[in-house]
Structures are given as structure tokens and as C-alpha cells.
Length: 122
Image (cartoon, rainbow, N blue to C red):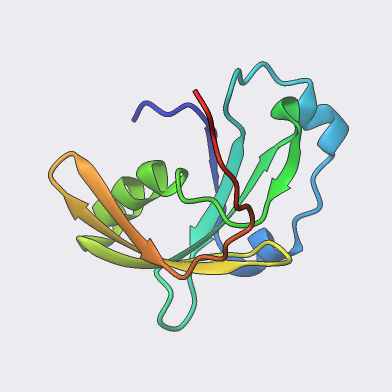
């Protein structure tokens, strides 16, 4: 599967939760505009868990990332045999995301918070 990010799959959600990566070493990887996704099977009603580290583009850890689910949802859908998945991002802020595979698209739903309001002039 082609992705802009590195994908690391581990065995347990607790491994993702407890991860403390070497941010300086990760920043030296030649990833371009991507980062490193770490994922594992979920627990309870969560199909998979994840975290994203992208220090090479100035983001040590992204607290809630919709775009990585375009990589994760097809991966976990194939592994779990499901078209609708529930994900949890295990950053400090965290978040829950529902993903539905629709052909070559991933529909993403969840709660969001407004973090910026402004006007753009062209």
C-alpha cells in the first residue's frame, strides 16, 4: 500500500499508548511531508488505535489527525474484514474517529473542535 507516511504496526494498544519515541531521530528520517504512524488493534469497541509523529515537518505529535485514516482504514478493513471501523488516536488530547470505506475513498466522521477563525483574502 502506498502512503506518504511510514506505517508501524505493533501487537497491542498499550504499546502505542506507552510509546515515547526519539523525536530528534525521527526528525532526521527523510519522510518529505509525512510522518510515522504507529498503530495496533484496538480494545473494546475500538477497532484500532494510532498515534502520528511528524517532527520533520515541525509536529512532534499530532493530537488528532484525520488524514492518516486514509492509510489506516484500508489497512485495518482488510485485516479485520470490515468496511466501517472505529478508531482512537492515543495522543494526550486524543480523539475518536469513525471511518467507512467507500470504493477508493475513506469517509471520516467524528467530533471536531474549532481552533482557528479568520478571513482569507486573495
